[in-house]
Image 1: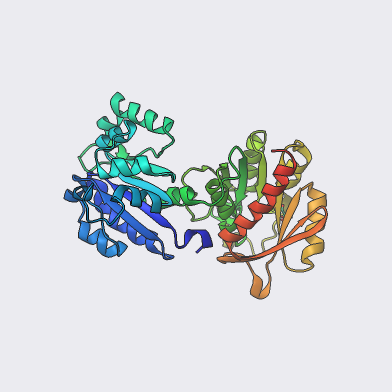
Image 2: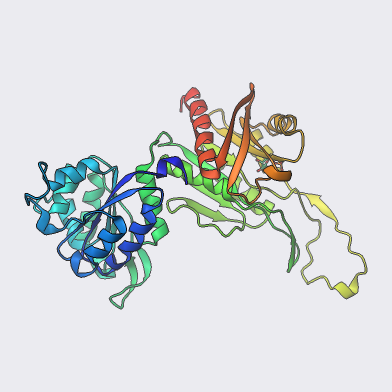
Amino acid sequence: MTAWKEKRRILLGVSGGISAYKVPDFVRALRHGGNEVDCILTEAAERFVSPMVLATLSERRVWLERDFLSDDGGPQIPHIRLAERAEACGVVPCTADTLRKIAQGEAGTLLGATLLALRAPVVLFPAMNVHMWDHPATQASVTRCRELGYRVIEPEEGYLACGYEGRGRLPSKEVILEELWRALSPKCDLEGVRVLVTAGPTLEFLDPVRFLSNPSSGKMGYAMARTAWYRGAEVCLVTGPVPLDPPPGVECVRVTSALEMHDAVLRKLEWATVIVKAAAVGDYRAAQQETRKIKRESRERLCLDLEQNPDIAAAVGSRKRADQFLLGFAAETDDLIAHAQSKMRRKGLDMIVANPVSGQRNAFGAEDNSVVVIDKSGVVAEFSGNKESVADSLWDEVGKRLRGKGA
Ligand code: C5P
């Protein structure tokens, strides 16, 4: 677990929609790492989720509407105390009625008053019937809430508990947790920065059923994308095929081959401020891709005729503008620093992250990584730990240099 995701204080406002039944699961997930979760239930929410379940899972008192302005909260009234404690707040689910009240700054309920007293970031997760969501009155509340500085997450499309199909579903647990982590991120220094990340392996098909590839898991690239998004960047992730979910607020372009990745990156290049080349791009592809399956019986020996793929990093390095920053990765089995340095020069990178991929320190597929950061002045830092915390440290290094460029 990344250090800043531990021992945080999170407030959940729960309003009375059917998807409130999912909230105990969110509380459980948030508790990992010693995080404290306070829950405030509206009067209607009590009909959809049991306060006792939430109190048991959070190991804290659950706050109900009848606690508002009651005198058993000690010397400070509950809404002020709850607002002061919270480092981030999610309203989940946020019903049409609660959304309207928040938009109007309503202070006559415990949840409403707490939200007004709160200085921490708040994320609203509306969930309701599709027609209620589409109604101009609800949309006006969404607009107003955004003007007031709340982050409002669009509900998802799908089957709704009310029997309709359409937009209105509460997003998945992963999306809700990621949005809350983003709200809790201690750094938001990448606001206004546009980050293009490549991640994962490429697949170079020989025939319709066989390909050449490599063991890249995509975890390092996804961690770079995720941490940049936490820190406020706009992120586009160009990814080879890996079984990972991209962070929710990130534009995701899925590709298979190196040529597709090359085209996707060049299409997006103009847009990007920082380009992170974390993908393990296949260096070769079949000179002639067979349209039918190669039959074992037809060939005693199979010699592959391969041709080189374009070097995407080098293509970016030769085209990039003075205000763009290009970060490469070098997975090396030997002579780590020397090989990484020569790659950085050859490909026109601003900085390179060298990581060993042999023996015990093999980072391919692992949760942890141990890297050496090199720029034109030589080795500048070494980091090790889980890939997310390494990614965070790498963004510190990139951030310093972006500020140097006046970004
Ligand atoms: O494969 P190699 O070790 O040369 O990779 C170094 C850097 O170049 C990495 O950042 C990788 O993503 C990038 N690269 C690329 N296109 C290639 C090969 C590598 O962008 N065809």
